[in-house]
Image (cartoon, rainbow, N blue to C red; front, side):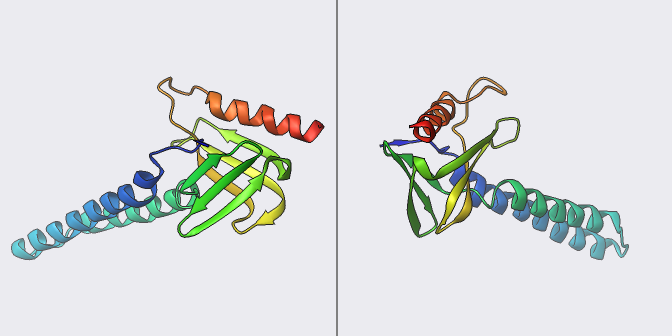
Length: 152
């Protein structure tokens, strides 16, 4: 078995949001104490971090929170893990592979013929390449193997 999902998924899903929202909360609390000490109210110091938190949440919800924790290639099937769930997806069950390598993190979406425990779409982060905007050879190989299963 080999891992075909990025090893940075844990950081992207669990650590970075804590850092992002923690920094914004720290900034708002610190600014609030400073404003109270001076006796003046600066709405921009409260509205801008709030807007950044809302924007960050929706961006992370769209690009990060739906990613599977791990995806492993086990020959004729993929083993998908997310939180405490695990499912096996035969390559013949994959109808389409959408690979978006211009996003950060790069996303791979598998559309399935029949739903698994994660639904009809399974999304994970592709391994990060050192070549900016470069395709992952692991995902390209997976696409070819799924196509060969479909034909055979």
